[in-house]
Image (cartoon, rainbow, N blue to C red; front, side, top):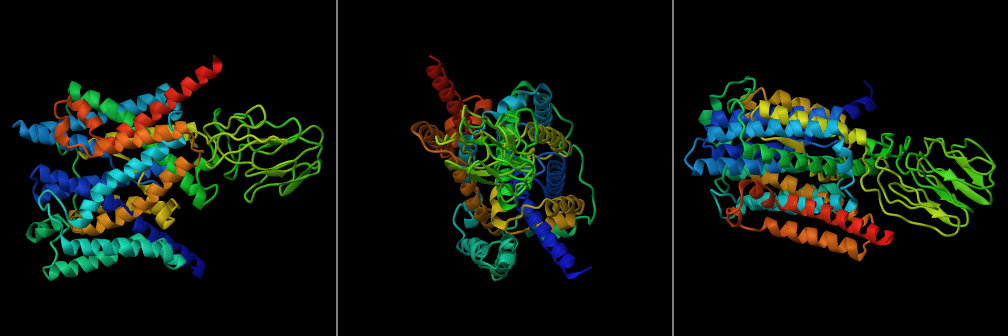
Length: 589
């Protein structure tokens, strides 16, 4: 093995470890909190952690390998977590056994999985894609960042139901971890920036352990405190199937599951859109989002990213809904030029990643399917962008268009249209939703909360620049193997809560950045400002409502209205759709 191969193996190995830490940090909190609500023993808590880690590893692997094929981690879905917490709390308060509520929860996840598969079969997913504009995706990211910041800030400060006061020592360590990660990600050596999260966690864990040993910090790892019970755990044991009992159903949980299925669809699409754009930014042409998938409603952008716009002289050019590359009309000569061509007195050149960009003579030529980022300088200098672009009479780059700002120009006039509603192809989304449905069944099978693609991964990917898939796939396998060793699972579950919270908090900065960039991809007019403002105000406001204020409502509405993320995102999608239809109606009149 030569030096280059060793370097690649080392980078991928460290990348896999970092992904594994990220998966752990996002997975261990829910089983520990749920076990506390159920007053579980250490053995029961570790068993739930085993099942959660196994499901996270398996579901992430399925999505990355067969679903969206993007570097997105799966984790406990916030909506499912809220439901199980509420159902268990309500059941226990009414004096009933929590086991019955958990069996209903399993039935709900099976139902949600069936609904997701049904959406795939019926083709309704295609219609839902139109709802996710850049404003909706950006609003979702911003609200998600705000919602998660409250959770992880409490974790950084050591605040919990059992300990409502701030732990000064824990706060100092967590703020230090937060600062280390930010400094390394921005100012560290180029080879170190990608591993800022794992370095920060390692430094924080050591510092927290020293403080706990000196008595100045409480053991923040949760289950690691009971050393006697931990020592009695077996070294190897397979996770248990249907640990909560056989699934059960009732009308209320079934209706809730159907609603949650649609929420999971929106979450999956928004996550794929955000991370897909980010991957294409870090590795041009590296994701199927950037390439498109060649569906009838999309643009397949060959080998690169920025394609799908028409540029013309004279009468103008039109990039059709299913076209690839760009059209150039003029008097120029030359055919099949990969590097550059001439159109009349204009100079034409293919983008940095453009291949097969040809310019023909006569009354026009069509650039090849591999064209990406073609640019023509004639009467006007224009750039073939990505997304939905209007050129001349108007060109529509469909759902398969690659991400980025789109523009089209006609001769000396110039025209500009908005960014494509969503740079996702139908097949990518169909695979992703299919995998999500299967993942709900796997979650029910192993009695854990339902999993979903975590949009917060976008922040992690941008911070660490970890866009490659192989390290994530390796981390998934390692996590699934780890789940078979209860003793190791228990010790890893002892990662100090403030340290893990600080690491995730640092990634939220990039998550908010992705949301802001998505919103800023289109120009701000009064319509967009109003829609986004109303959505953020109501969605963010609901996050601060006391839970008691919704108790008079039916339980199904409590699940929905108690989640400002869902309400804000849905409100943005509805307002955009209604306002657009109204404007189109006014024009038609």
